[in-house]
Amino acid sequence: MSGRKHNNPYNRDEIKSNSMARETFYNVLGPLASNDPAKLKESQTRNIILVGKSRSGKSTLFRVLKNPLHIAENETIFSETRNAYLHPFTVETTERTDSGDKIVNYNINIIDTPGLFEQRVSGETASDNDEIKKLILKCLESEITKINCIFFVFTLQAGLNKDDVAAIKQFSALFQGAENVMSLIITRAEGWDNTFKQQKIQEVKDHPELKSIFDQVSGRIFFSGSFSNLALNKLDNKKAEDMFIDIAYMRFDILSHIFESKDAHSISNLSHYRLIDSDIISISISLKETIEKASSITGDKQLVTDRIRSLVEQLLSRQHIYIGNSEKLKELNNTVTEANNILRQLIDKK
Ligand SMILES: Nc1nc2c(ncn2[C@@H]2O[C@H](COP(=O)(O)OP(=O)(O)OP(=O)(O)O)[C@@H](O)[C@H]2O)c(=O)[nH]1
Ligand SMILES: [Mg+2]
Image (tube, rainbow, N blue to C red):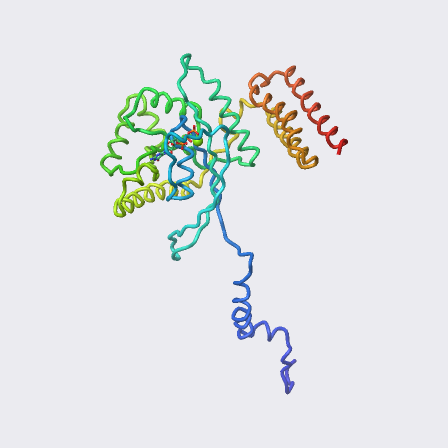
């Protein structure tokens, strides 16, 4: 009110507009807040699938992406990946923007898969189809509905042979429609100089049967490499450093591509998704939940794994015969009822 002799110092409007109060707020509370054990970090998610023939280096690649100092096991202690497996990790990186450098986190989900595209005498691809269906189920179970990159992993030690060409063609056919997220990665490339890498790219590009695929993936071919026990035994410090720079360079090239792959391909647009009857998906998931419920309630993993898991495995391995077959689907529903009965019995016993 005008005409008063004193300004009331507790006038709320005055306090709000007092810039000292605001300054004090940040000066005093800022350091306190920066010690808060729960810090906010913005992040983006990238979902990646690795496919390729057995021993092509898929599992080694994801380990190198996690750690450039990963040491590949000797070929003799080979461990085969038996099921598609999800490996999540977060990478913090600095990105240049118009307003300066900015720290960005990427949550990367890599799905490593068992070997695909092996040539069989009859040339049939039934098991590849099954594996891709299982891969899709794996994505759905992990609530992954979009894929940012599908990497076809292969090795070119002795040049492109007939089997490699057939495998690349099979890969491109199986993931038809997802070309925009597809790339090729050549492994075991540590120690290759740029000229040699360009020669390898040219080899793929010039191959009469691969030219169209090269164009479809817009020439996206990456390289990767890894330290190995074998190499470490022979390297002096200088050569080890050179190899590290080499491996880290190729690794960062792949990671940068992953960061930049913002556009994703919907799982439901993969042709194999449509092959999987939605009933089968929901039944598989409900069976999986049943197993988890049973194990957590009873704490008796053995009983559960023996009875129910075998039912699930049967179901997953024979999915294709249920697709679009209502009689078979009825059978399947009975299986679910059976699984749930087992669960109930287990709970009653407790
Ligand atoms: N030196 C070197 N060795 C590699 C590289 N990639 C893979 N290896 C070796 O090759 C063998 C096969 O590699 P894995 O990564 O297990 O192959 P994979 O594709 O996962 O094989 P499956 O799981 O059977 O499909 C292993 O002994 C690795 O140590 C690489 O970039 N450099
Ligand atoms: Mg593997």
